[in-house]
Length: 252
Image 1 (cartoon, rainbow, N blue to C red):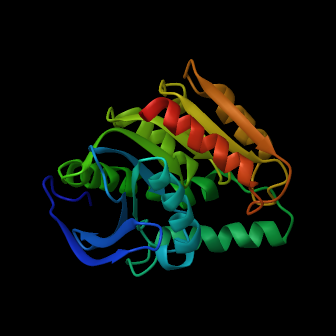
Image 2: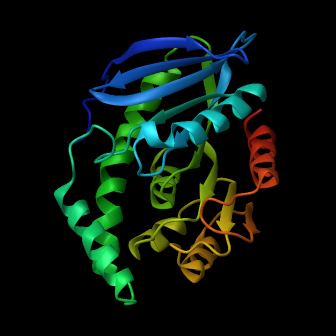
């Protein structure tokens, strides 16, 4: 169920990091999130939405915080939101069954069928995108934060849907590291914002050809595929630097 329009954001903690970045935990309709802002800010900062992996914010925190600190150094505010079914949020029974089916298929060396992929990914997309839109309403109402808005990372299908339905998102960095339902290829054709897509060539859990086909399907006039050798967690530092330059080019 989508959050009611106008759902209030409540800050629950505040911490000034050693590099002068203000980190604030918040809840939005009971959903946990984190906001990082550069301090001091001489003007409203552009905003980057950090889509987390489906590991829970506590587990993903080190990599999210590192990306947020880099973005703050470039003058951006960043925010992340706990995914449905992750962290302390209620489990999604259909998604949990899909995970079990996925692991069983991979152990047996069988192809992962469309039914499993749809059950695994589409519930996340359908629930999280409206939550991100509600979060965006609240974030852009805060002093010190303004547009334009970018989206970075996360489950790639969430980024695709958000790019289609949310006109306030004007550029996106997408991580090609998750299964993609077939319906998302049609949605990808509707994406027109500038894109920077990161692909780990040897990602053991990623269908490389599906990632290449999705990139081909994007309707954006400006789209860049940044592919690197290595597994899922082996993204090199220079790939992050290129993504940061992409946002500086399009959001400032």
